Length: 332
Image 1: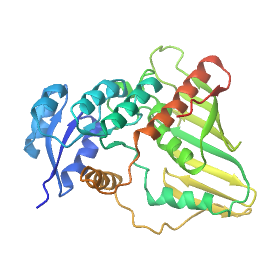
Image 2 (image 1 turned 90 degrees about the horizontal axis):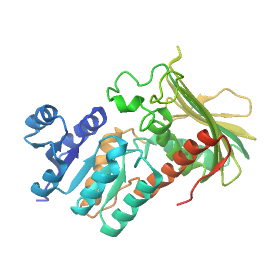
Image 3 (image 1 turned 135 degrees about the vertical axis):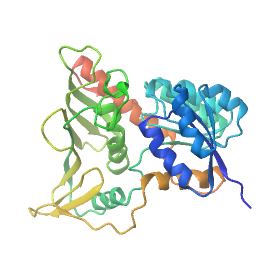
């Protein structure tokens, strides 16, 4: 009988708790330990799982036999905790963005490569059937020559109602570009190609020096020459909108509501496109791929190299917002 994959979870906020459910429902996973600075939260989470509760992740790594560790803490702590996990020889799943800075992300990538451990970034749109359908719509030539793309992010409230962590609304670690951006940057990079330079303008609250952006406008220039116009707006009386549209000389393709593919030929209205593959919850897809990879099998994961590429775009965006000019993206 194949033994269970023993998992430890560091960070038990909203995102950590969400993926924890996917781990606990997989028949080949045993959540052996959980860790959070909030001792009461750690104990409450661990009890029904018959897992061990910790407040110090280093002690957990030293004293519990684990195969895989999920790092779900705020971004500023990813680097240090991930290096501890890697040093302990455990396979690693990390929340996005990969780190707080590009240099930290590059450091993490070098460390996992040197250690030879399985590593992945949690990007739920990865391997989504709707995203795969969108990719085919762009790739099969039906759009003709690609002319322009638009990424639109609208949030009636930020942080959103379910985001109870104060850092999500802070300028250092949070904000919609850093928090939501990686999901769509991953789609852009894998569907449209490398981003070579960025221009960005960001608006912050005039009366709060530490709050994240309330609006942003920018342009991503791809290696192909294609431009992606980015518009982000928060705290407006509109429904949430996360959409990506690609305009071609013959047709248009896009994603609405994050991952629903739409398309049109000529001047026809955009219509939903059927998705062939059965939808599986993102957490279940990710956990299944992790279990397979930890056991030495195949598994479709986003590795840290993509995390570094996304981090390079975020760094260029932030730099451009500061100096007001185009900024080249560091190519991994």
